[in-house]
Image (cartoon, rainbow, N blue to C red; front, side, top):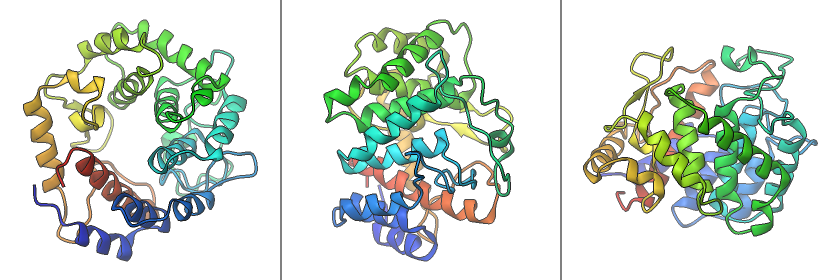
Length: 293
């Protein structure tokens, strides 16, 4: 598959935020993990959470579950860091009594923020938000058995298991993808995740195409959104041919300027560029992991 990593680096140098440039450098094998961690620290708050637009469509400074997601993604990439426990502690403080995390916390200034973040109910647990932070939390905690038993992650896991076990119809496409990702990541430490993954398979189309209802025209969750990594349990949801075709689609998605694009709308000029940088790093990471770059 023809992927131009030099062009991707040039795109990020021209358009990307420092964090994504540092992440790309690290993924390409020449980067400094401490430099990546320093870059993500710029989005950290004194409460141990992350805000300040780390989630590009949530520009507000307050710490948010969406910010925790993106911070934990970085920690999963670069390896063990004390910051992981600090994020887990913060998530434990903002979780609701049932163990779930709200979709978003209150926002004082909605400038540049997506309406779905601003209008979220902070008193209601969200499978989508809980699954996305818990799933990447398992990946970030993979090298630290004590973190796998952190009270926040234990409670969030129980919440997700309970909600997923009671589903009788397909949830919102993005929530479905995050739930699959959560079960995949949790299965190493919690084997009971595997029967639930088989249950969710009933809701995942064989071709892996799950349109995002209410999203932008053409916005769709795709096979690699459900199962990005080879050798993982989630891969059994799709045939080898479906995964290979999606890897070709991803590789072919590199634009003439060297970057990748997203299929959803952005809520500020900054977010539009930042999502492209994020998507570029994500595409390269996925293609490298699948020996397709």
